[in-house]
Amino acid sequence: MEWKRHENWVESMKRYDTISVKPSFDIEKSIQTSKRLYCGCNFRFENDYLQGSIMFELIDEFKNPSIWFLLPDDNVVLFHFQGNKCYKYTSSEYGTEGGSIQYACVKFDKQGNMMKTED
Image (cartoon, rainbow, N blue to C red; front, side, top):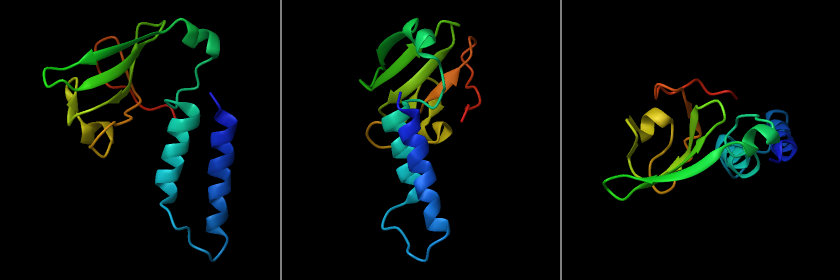
């Protein structure tokens, strides 16, 4: 992952706090986009750890796909999904805006419970 590029972007956005020019874009959305582009899910796993993961796709009864990762510790990460609901949670519970592809980036424990984000 390109963590440094994301960290540089976040740092560059802080300049708008000190200058009188307002950006023509939503800063928070640009930071979230940078996170998706350069960090994937914002879990700072070592590359060796990720090499032991398994990626899989599930398709629900409404033909909505979701991409998941089974981690070496047997927890799973929901990377992204389509539709208004995935597994037992709604898009609003994932903190996504609904619509097309939604990057939930949520980690679940072995019992299927959503875990706190590790930003």
